[in-house]
Image 1: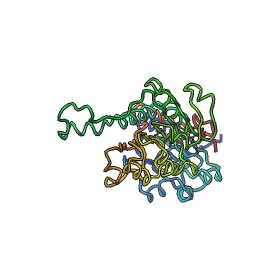
Image 2: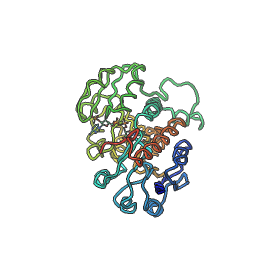
Image 3: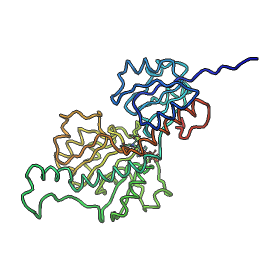
Image 4: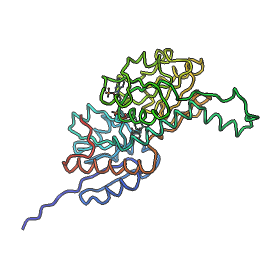
Length: 330
Ligand code: NDP
Ligand code: DGY
């Protein structure tokens, strides 16, 4: 009698991930898991060594999966599963050329990220961090009619740069605040999506000129890189507030700094920066009218657990040659 021997598939996980995802991988009888078991980023040397000879890679947005990593992995690598919806850290052309499948985590983080975007908008336009600071440092001397005023959402115009999953979820949450008008830009109009908010598709310039609040929710691509620059900020209203929860590189940060310092725009809230983490002596951090968060858009316990399980299931399905729960079309 002949017994068919199936080789175990080898998987590399580049960081400590939530338990749910790890459990999915450890319970898979057909794979062995090696992990960089730390909350801190894997050094490049360890990444190159860890990925060598693996069939599957579960990675994070903070790792650049480029030609060097793919070469180090070698020809066995069949699936890359990223614990993110953004995939700008993956060298997709090269990945496609090598016939590697890619999994990612859309939809399940949309609510958490939209919620955080709205929280950041409110914190920025109503000056919450600055106000909290004043309470602590004794700046709160009495109730003053002209003190700590900001801009409210009622009757405002909100411009959404990229009306995708998260952009729409933000508009849905902002509508009950009394926003009067929604504008959006993108690669093409999306009348079905826009109908819910009566959102108007407009050129980027018009969005900059007419919005009281600009929400950046597009993906980072060669076209969107540096899109929010001097030209963009100088067209915005002086009273306008700029929020970015997409990727830091969509914004030219030097131009943003100048716009904030010169009063060209009123305030900015950023959940994403270049680089990440932003150095603690970065000029943007010296500004009272700039609120910066450490990339926590999807950071709820439930969302991160679900993301890790989805990333693990994407990886296993891809390795088994099955359809993935969320596969990126290359
Ligand atoms: P979607 O793919 O649903 O949306 C991306 C949007 O970007 C689309 O509406 C697309 O427009 C738009 N876009 C692409 N190119 C351009 C362009 N040249 N000009 C204007 N808009 C453009 O993705 P999600 O909504 O799920 O996620 C969006 C991004 O948010 C992710 O790629 C990621 O970078 C970031 N993100 C950040 C998080 C955080 O923690 N801060 C959490 C989750 C995501 P069109 O439809 O017309 O092509
Ligand atoms: C993503 O998923 O792209 C975010 O930036 C982190 O959740």
